[in-house]
Length: 227
Image: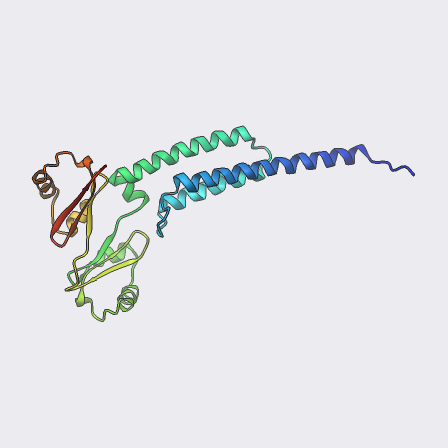
């Protein structure tokens, strides 16, 4: 008995194998790119908080990988070029974010004080769209019955509340991060950039870029230099 196999059927089978083989290669490449990104470019590795920058780059990475896998018109060479451009832009964004005050404010944000010495900053609450019910709930979670018992309360960049009771041990405030002065943090401890520069001169530090981190804790300026 003889079986006749249509050339069109064979051609279709071959085309399917080629198509799914290409999809497999693309999946392997996409997984490799994702692993490299998570290993070397993820800014929140080991941290709970996800910054706006992470959300942006994750969204873009997902779009690039999904288009590459599903769109047969996007070749491997095109994908490699796009990934290189994407990696370069991500490197620039990371440098801008973690080495400049402007970049940090745009892509990460900064803590916003809403209660200072028992007084509520109504304008800050309005800008952050925080209602009185939200504030009351946050205080109840900290077992605080009255706003007058609050020394300081602020909203962190990830949306968490940080609340310090009156009479509690003083909290630390980072005023220099990787050679960059946080002016809002200075205002929070009622100090000025001129005061900070004077304190650095006392410690024989002339270049602020030498400092990895400086924090104000219990009335003292604590400094850790780079290297």
